[in-house]
Length: 152
Length: 421
Image (cartoon, rainbow over all chains, first blue to last red; front, side):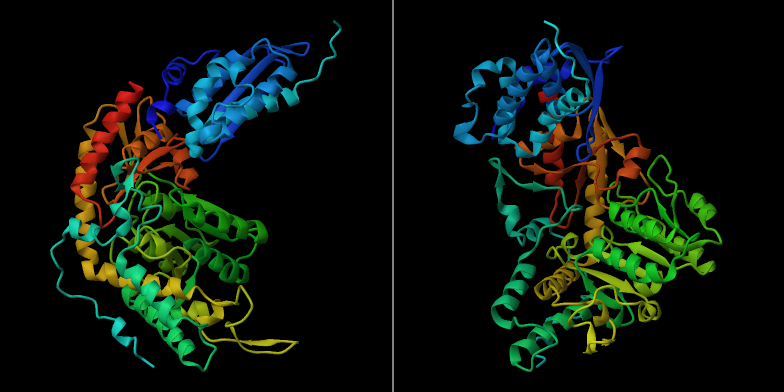
């Protein structure tokens, strides 16, 4: 259990300077995530263009893992469709919960890009919920958002 | 039949010099390496570790004495009953209660408070009544009262706390009203370490004829408790915070109150006779111990209290206070560290935050150095909210900690700063 595996440079960088931080005004949907055990709070606002997440922002307070994960997530999902995001979420979930030899060996690992920085979290089971809070919040925001029928 | 009577030793009068290294050696788990580093255990407020004396007492019971209690005519059952009831006597003597009839074994502080809320509360509390707690309480001394209030229409009120974490006694006094039926407060705050002025609180409440419940979970490990001097009406504590096993705790209740309380759980052991129409309940305290109790837990708790007595409760308290002072000074000198809760009377708990670093990240980095602390809201969310904090890091001390542990903590916090810049 190496500390450097968890707090990789990418994680520390996104914790120090979170991307897409703040609130989108106006927005099509928003959701609040709360992890009462840690006290982490996350507010997510997003704008949709048809089926696609055109833009999104998050704000709140949390640990380095939860902040960096949210920051990385906003970069990863911006411009993607609901279906693409659902697949991405599955791959991230696998990444966060896979232990030992399975770690990072998921089929979609190659597509995860910078999100691979979260691979070390799997070795710290107590921290998995920190990294997944933003994804649950995003799912809630997407479920709440009106599904617009694409005219394309 | 009383072959185990020798196990009940008189409390030592002479206090031996305190040797934390020798004390630590009596706790096998503290010899473990965590992440390649010798363990520094600073989470005793969540759960303390257990000395060999407790482990051996439990092993002896399990390997030589076990059978069900209060039931059999055979030798094992008699020995088990003797050992279980001797543990009750050890508890009585440790707390200076008048009678073992006032000592009820329960699962822990949480169950003790739930017992009072369900038995005493449901029979005494009515719509419009008030129960007074403080903002410092552990959830175990909040939620049972909320449930009671929801069921009865009573109202829960909370006395305010000063910015340094001390109880605002004037604020508490102002909240005592003609409707107040119970004052339920922590003896020592688990989140901040504040020692509450419980003697004054009991005087204030009793002057108005209001009974007082004290949550002693964080007090019993760190100071001597004299229930006759305190004169409170209910007192609750847990075994696992005082070097005993988990799943065992104690409710002390003044006999006159306990005698008038209806049973809260029905079953074996709490009855004298059972017919299909009705049953006759057992005497105190067994009326409140339905079902086969945690016999080995009670015996382990008895051994734990004897262990604490062998060190000298006051000697342990003085040792821990020294560590608390040392740690407070050393941490306050580190850049960006803020101590949360600086009451003038504190037990061995040090809550703190670090600028720019979330407590969970502090906890993970310290763990990589073999240092175990608690991070989060400490099951005391109202006080955290009052301080505008979602979480703190908390180091808490026990009899086995030393100045070296404090130095390791300080070095660990420097490492945290290195990682997060």
